Length: 209
Image (cartoon, rainbow, N blue to C red; front, side, top):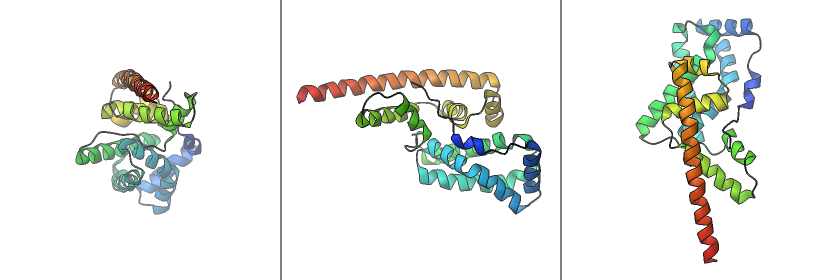
Protein backbone atom coordinates (compact mmCIF):
# COMPACT_ATOMS: atom_id res chain seq x y z
CA UNK A 1 0.00 0.00 0.00
CA UNK A 2 1.40 3.37 -1.02
CA UNK A 3 0.21 6.93 -0.94
CA UNK A 4 2.56 7.97 -3.74
CA UNK A 5 0.69 9.58 -6.61
CA UNK A 6 2.73 12.56 -7.69
CA UNK A 7 0.85 15.17 -9.66
CA UNK A 8 1.79 14.61 -13.35
CA UNK A 9 1.12 18.28 -14.14
CA UNK A 10 4.28 19.19 -12.25
CA UNK A 11 6.15 18.48 -15.49
CA UNK A 12 4.63 21.67 -16.95
CA UNK A 13 6.44 23.92 -14.48
CA UNK A 14 8.75 26.49 -16.07
CA UNK A 15 12.25 25.08 -16.59
CA UNK A 16 14.03 28.44 -16.85
CA UNK A 17 14.27 29.90 -13.33
CA UNK A 18 15.50 33.26 -14.60
CA UNK A 19 12.50 33.62 -16.89
CA UNK A 20 10.16 32.46 -14.13
CA UNK A 21 11.50 34.97 -11.61
CA UNK A 22 11.05 37.71 -14.17
CA UNK A 23 7.42 36.70 -14.61
CA UNK A 24 6.87 36.76 -10.84
CA UNK A 25 8.50 40.17 -10.56
CA UNK A 26 6.38 41.52 -13.42
CA UNK A 27 3.26 40.19 -11.67
CA UNK A 28 4.40 41.87 -8.45
CA UNK A 29 4.63 45.13 -10.36
CA UNK A 30 0.98 44.78 -11.40
CA UNK A 31 1.40 43.20 -14.83
CA UNK A 32 -1.86 41.33 -15.46
CA UNK A 33 -0.43 39.26 -18.33
CA UNK A 34 2.38 38.02 -16.09
CA UNK A 35 -0.07 37.10 -13.36
CA UNK A 36 -2.25 35.28 -15.88
CA UNK A 37 0.82 33.27 -16.92
CA UNK A 38 1.32 32.20 -13.30
CA UNK A 39 -2.38 31.41 -13.03
CA UNK A 40 -2.23 29.18 -16.10
CA UNK A 41 0.78 27.29 -14.73
CA UNK A 42 -0.70 26.62 -11.30
CA UNK A 43 -4.49 26.77 -11.44
CA UNK A 44 -5.15 23.10 -12.23
CA UNK A 45 -2.76 21.89 -9.54
CA UNK A 46 -4.16 24.26 -6.94
CA UNK A 47 -7.74 23.26 -7.79
CA UNK A 48 -6.84 19.59 -7.41
CA UNK A 49 -4.95 20.15 -4.16
CA UNK A 50 -7.76 22.16 -2.59
CA UNK A 51 -10.40 19.69 -3.76
CA UNK A 52 -8.54 16.96 -1.89
CA UNK A 53 -8.22 19.14 1.16
CA UNK A 54 -11.93 19.91 1.45
CA UNK A 55 -13.38 16.85 -0.25
CA UNK A 56 -15.36 18.63 -2.94
CA UNK A 57 -14.41 19.57 -6.50
CA UNK A 58 -16.66 22.61 -6.75
CA UNK A 59 -15.51 23.97 -3.41
CA UNK A 60 -11.92 23.29 -4.45
CA UNK A 61 -12.37 25.41 -7.57
CA UNK A 62 -14.01 28.19 -5.57
CA UNK A 63 -11.20 28.13 -3.03
CA UNK A 64 -8.64 28.21 -5.83
CA UNK A 65 -10.21 31.42 -7.09
CA UNK A 66 -10.09 32.80 -3.55
CA UNK A 67 -6.46 31.72 -3.28
CA UNK A 68 -5.41 33.52 -6.46
CA UNK A 69 -7.24 36.67 -5.38
CA UNK A 70 -5.22 36.58 -2.16
CA UNK A 71 -2.05 35.91 -4.13
CA UNK A 72 -2.65 38.91 -6.38
CA UNK A 73 -3.20 41.16 -3.37
CA UNK A 74 -0.22 39.81 -1.44
CA UNK A 75 2.28 39.60 -4.32
CA UNK A 76 3.78 43.08 -3.79
CA UNK A 77 4.85 42.04 -0.30
CA UNK A 78 6.47 38.75 -1.30
CA UNK A 79 10.25 38.92 -1.05
CA UNK A 80 11.43 35.53 -2.38
CA UNK A 81 10.56 35.14 -6.04
CA UNK A 82 12.54 31.90 -6.33
CA UNK A 83 10.14 30.16 -3.93
CA UNK A 84 6.87 31.37 -5.35
CA UNK A 85 5.48 27.82 -5.47
CA UNK A 86 5.89 27.12 -1.76
CA UNK A 87 4.49 30.57 -0.95
CA UNK A 88 1.50 29.85 -3.19
CA UNK A 89 0.77 26.51 -1.51
CA UNK A 90 1.03 28.17 1.90
CA UNK A 91 -1.77 30.54 0.92
CA UNK A 92 -3.79 27.69 -0.57
CA UNK A 93 -3.36 25.54 2.55
CA UNK A 94 -4.35 28.37 4.87
CA UNK A 95 -7.37 29.09 2.68
CA UNK A 96 -8.46 25.46 2.95
CA UNK A 97 -7.96 25.38 6.72
CA UNK A 98 -9.97 28.57 7.17
CA UNK A 99 -12.74 27.12 5.02
CA UNK A 100 -12.82 23.88 7.00
CA UNK A 101 -12.96 25.77 10.27
CA UNK A 102 -15.93 27.72 8.99
CA UNK A 103 -17.58 24.55 7.78
CA UNK A 104 -16.68 22.77 11.04
CA UNK A 105 -16.01 19.47 9.35
CA UNK A 106 -13.20 16.99 8.91
CA UNK A 107 -11.08 16.58 5.75
CA UNK A 108 -12.55 13.92 3.46
CA UNK A 109 -10.57 13.21 0.32
CA UNK A 110 -11.82 14.24 -3.09
CA UNK A 111 -12.96 11.13 -4.94
CA UNK A 112 -11.60 11.80 -8.41
CA UNK A 113 -7.96 12.43 -7.62
CA UNK A 114 -4.66 10.75 -8.39
CA UNK A 115 -4.75 9.46 -4.81
CA UNK A 116 -7.45 7.06 -5.99
CA UNK A 117 -4.91 5.73 -8.48
CA UNK A 118 -2.87 4.40 -5.57
CA UNK A 119 -5.82 2.26 -4.53
CA UNK A 120 -6.00 0.83 -8.04
CA UNK A 121 -2.27 0.11 -8.05
CA UNK A 122 -2.50 -1.94 -4.85
CA UNK A 123 -5.68 -3.72 -5.83
CA UNK A 124 -5.79 -7.23 -7.24
CA UNK A 125 -9.57 -7.58 -7.14
CA UNK A 126 -12.31 -6.52 -9.50
CA UNK A 127 -14.09 -3.17 -9.77
CA UNK A 128 -16.11 -3.67 -6.57
CA UNK A 129 -12.97 -4.37 -4.55
CA UNK A 130 -11.25 -1.33 -6.05
CA UNK A 131 -14.17 0.91 -5.08
CA UNK A 132 -14.08 -0.47 -1.54
CA UNK A 133 -10.33 0.16 -1.27
CA UNK A 134 -10.72 3.71 -2.62
CA UNK A 135 -13.34 4.42 0.04
CA UNK A 136 -11.13 2.93 2.73
CA UNK A 137 -8.26 5.21 1.68
CA UNK A 138 -10.50 8.26 1.94
CA UNK A 139 -11.87 7.18 5.33
CA UNK A 140 -8.37 6.49 6.62
CA UNK A 141 -7.07 9.88 5.50
CA UNK A 142 -9.98 11.69 7.11
CA UNK A 143 -8.71 10.52 10.51
CA UNK A 144 -5.46 12.49 10.12
CA UNK A 145 -5.04 15.95 11.59
CA UNK A 146 -4.98 18.87 9.10
CA UNK A 147 -1.22 19.33 9.46
CA UNK A 148 -0.45 15.65 8.93
CA UNK A 149 -2.83 15.63 5.97
CA UNK A 150 -1.25 18.70 4.37
CA UNK A 151 2.27 17.33 4.82
CA UNK A 152 1.35 14.00 3.23
CA UNK A 153 -0.39 15.63 0.28
CA UNK A 154 2.42 18.08 -0.32
CA UNK A 155 5.09 15.37 -0.20
CA UNK A 156 3.43 12.42 -1.93
CA UNK A 157 1.05 14.16 -4.33
CA UNK A 158 2.40 17.66 -5.03
CA UNK A 159 5.97 16.35 -4.96
CA UNK A 160 7.55 18.86 -2.56
CA UNK A 161 10.68 17.98 -0.64
CA UNK A 162 10.46 18.16 3.13
CA UNK A 163 12.47 21.38 3.00
CA UNK A 164 9.91 22.87 0.61
CA UNK A 165 7.05 21.69 2.82
CA UNK A 166 8.71 23.29 5.83
CA UNK A 167 9.03 26.56 3.95
CA UNK A 168 5.46 26.38 2.69
CA UNK A 169 3.83 25.58 6.06
CA UNK A 170 6.18 27.62 8.25
CA UNK A 171 7.42 24.51 10.03
CA UNK A 172 10.87 23.17 10.80
CA UNK A 173 12.16 20.34 8.62
CA UNK A 174 12.28 18.17 11.72
CA UNK A 175 8.58 18.83 12.37
CA UNK A 176 7.71 17.99 8.77
CA UNK A 177 9.66 14.74 9.00
CA UNK A 178 7.82 13.85 12.21
CA UNK A 179 4.41 14.78 10.77
CA UNK A 180 4.99 12.75 7.61
CA UNK A 181 6.21 9.74 9.59
CA UNK A 182 3.37 9.88 12.10
CA UNK A 183 0.83 10.64 9.40
CA UNK A 184 1.91 7.62 7.36
CA UNK A 185 1.76 5.38 10.43
CA UNK A 186 -1.68 6.66 11.42
CA UNK A 187 -2.88 6.21 7.88
CA UNK A 188 -1.54 2.64 7.77
CA UNK A 189 -3.25 1.67 11.03
CA UNK A 190 -6.53 3.31 10.04
CA UNK A 191 -6.48 1.68 6.60
CA UNK A 192 -5.75 -1.77 8.02
CA UNK A 193 -8.53 -1.40 10.59
CA UNK A 194 -11.02 -0.35 7.92
CA UNK A 195 -9.91 -3.17 5.62
CA UNK A 196 -10.43 -5.74 8.39
CA UNK A 197 -13.87 -4.31 9.08
CA UNK A 198 -14.74 -4.51 5.40
CA UNK A 199 -13.52 -8.11 5.24
CA UNK A 200 -15.70 -9.00 8.22
CA UNK A 201 -18.71 -7.33 6.63
CA UNK A 202 -18.14 -9.18 3.36
CA UNK A 203 -17.82 -12.47 5.20
CA UNK A 204 -21.14 -11.88 6.99
CA UNK A 205 -22.82 -11.09 3.69
CA UNK A 206 -21.51 -14.30 2.14
CA UNK A 207 -22.70 -16.36 5.12
CA UNK A 208 -26.20 -14.90 4.82
CA UNK A 209 -26.34 -15.78 1.14
